[in-house]
Image (cartoon, rainbow over all chains, first blue to last red; front, side, top):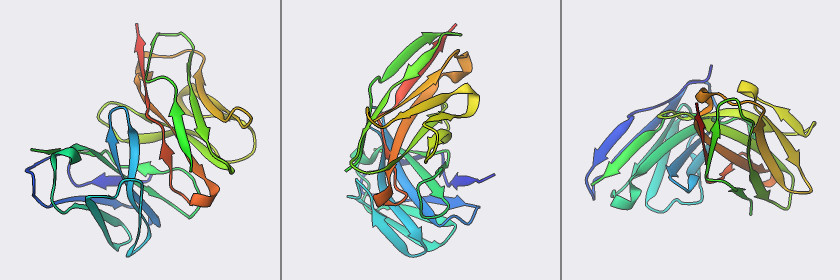
Amino acid sequence: DVKVTQSSRYLVKRTGEKVFLECVQDMDHENMFWYRQDPGLGLRLIYFSYDVKMKEKGDIPEGYSVSREKKERFSLILESASTNQTSMYLCASLSGSLPDTQYFGPGTRLTVL
Amino acid sequence: AQSVTQLDSQVPVFEEAPVELRCNYSSSVSVYLFWYVQYPNQGLQLLLKYLSGSTLVKGINGFEAEFNKSQTSFHLRKPSVHISDTAEYFCAVSEGTSGSRLTFGEGTQLTVNP
């Protein structure tokens, strides 16, 4: 079974802090994704990566950056956290280049005070 | 650009009743369609998917969906729901031209009451 893990289930940070969210997958998948989930808005794509050191902006990249130095790990970085980044963050991975099943981690609920 | 609309934000039903969760998409090209389920305090897991072939797709836990190209819909159905089906359900679409990225709908909260 594919396993996608995220470094924290709950995180509380202060405005202006730099925040790192880590995601690791164990199935050698090429593609990895970061989404944020907000009530009534569904999931929105922040960034995705289709290979090591490769990244593409999603629909809402402002205020975020990402890093993919190893195939199994995809990090989401909030350079200076703001209260409007309080949300649930979900990581996913996918094998291959065509649309198919994305495997999700359990999510990180981030609160920015 | 692709978009997805889930027509009902909340659907309350009684146990053993049938249910339909509605999903419409807009796209000018071929699409791939998915339904995901999120149980409380968990990530998303795939219920079913349409990639090609038969327009009636069967998934896990007795769910099925029908791809209707003329109506640009992909409604999810189950003939008899259980309490354990209480969860949030997300419809998602991917266009062939956008690679593997998905666009999700807003979600439908299904609540099954005894």
